[in-house]
Length: 581
Figure (cartoon, rainbow, N blue to C red):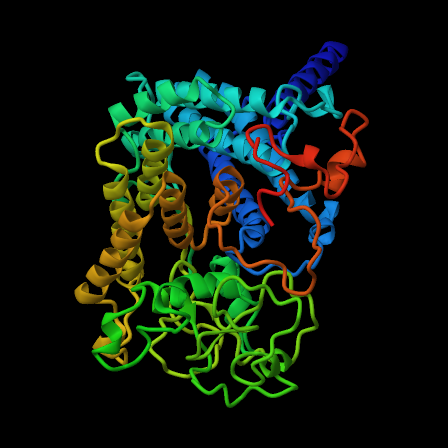
């Protein structure tokens, strides 16, 4: 009897242990490394969204300098960037965006979360297309397979572009699925609006078809279909942007703001060419619209004070010495003799400063050392970085100045669509909702409205700003009339395209990807500043080196690109080797 009690007791204990083990089994999943069957779809999507913006910012920061939108040091194109420079961007694209999207999509499909699927496909499509635009042939069909394939080979750029279009078509179908479950808990771009995501997908289809129009005979008909349907980002209500915050820890501020606005003086240099293009190209090398008087404030580009912030507004550059600004001695503000290598275009652009009134950046390809000029550099203004509005306050930058960094990444705006439509009408002969000329006017108008309305959109209030410093209807109308006149006066379609692309270039401030694409596709703006410190910078970089993490660790990767070789063009670029200087 005693034996039976012992055995029975042991059975109870064993049963208890079994029950406990079953309870413990449910706790064995590390929440930091969830499986694809237990992961939260919306958390996956959050990761994809955040990494996507990081990828956009990285790509923009490398592409913009080559298009002269931002400063490029050079001086030789072959060493303007090294393969390792692109490691972070490459990893963000493949492990941050694509791998997480691929892991999330099947899980979301089983839960009928088709809106999340559609969003992930769109962000993946943009990322893949931009990888092609940056590098050429890239991994796709063998990519993001984890341990199943750690050495993916590349696919041809044209094939990846075709897959991008398929992804966008699938995304549109997913977003239109009427049996979809609830929208994502967090949609950082469109607040869960299916309609806006569909509009974005159609707009990206147009963007990538236009990008390949030089080599794809079927693109014209597809572009016409999109323009006829016209479900595109035509108004600012559908703008595709990422909104930053003001937090320092963790840092949620716009990267350009974080780099410029500190207590140790300004950050990096801005591009003299781009400052000139906005401030003085249309005004014989002078800068208008920065005076506090009402008369002067009615001329000039209305976006000038919003784009750039001057720490010093001295017309005479009294602060400029051989120590703080050695290049000034060779400009029109000192000796009128330019260095022999100084390019003749753009006209009346002085070396290192632009047209008076305190604008100072750096010329394209100027790799000279940095003097103690942190308190005098022109820096990013309130648009799009969330910085300070320039009302000639003659004040050095400091931490927290302006709107605090709650700017945006302008990934795609309605003004971009207008300019792209205009290019399609002018170059392909397709029809749109307006003529090419009217679309150029629309692009300029929408860009000015976006920029000049930006402080209010951010909640930026500064009662010290004189009314004369703000853009006004008279100034805006005068600028639009000036652009309209330039377009009408252009004698050929090529000249009209240059006016169009020049205005598109200005409207793209904050987005470096599109001007780099545009200049390779169209060759415009044609008056880009040449390399400043050498007459022989080498062939323009028609694509970037492959990242070190790809070519050094992947036995199936192509050989690293040879600097200055024409074969470095991406598949859609069939323009001559010397098309861009």
